[in-house]
Length: 208
Image (cartoon, rainbow, N blue to C red; front, side):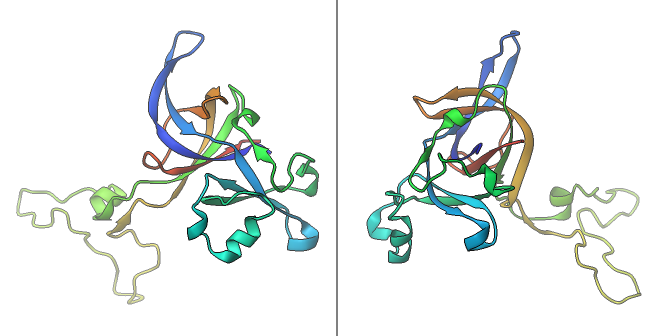
């Protein structure tokens, strides 16, 4: 299973074999521990639950402590990865086993998921790229939303582009390439930008 929970470190650049300088995002990828394996018979679907980093035992609720006892770790971050069928659950995917960054290699194509930076409340120009009104020839509506409804049906339809919360939502960037894998230091380098701030949680999955 090619999937890991990582934490964004920042951006840097590398020089490829053909001499091209490419921007990469560094991800801190310490080994993830399998905390639970779900099957069709017991849970109705097939999935693997992974734990990342270590939480303080004093702050871990007893229910969670009992759940993670078999894995031998109190993870700070837990995520679940669905599998297509039960055949993907190999002998390596047992409760307590570790998944290291070595599951990925240079050149692999991956999908990266993170939470984008929150920008707070924003107007329609910044949030939806609306045009502003003219500032000459008597124009008075510069950054207003403008007409949002009509006489019929006397309501505003759901999904209307208006001012509101910008950012802080789950974003997936697809088909990025792995440029660097350092298992000793626990780093993975992905070509291009990855959503979210530094130190944010990033999920990396194989494209296949």
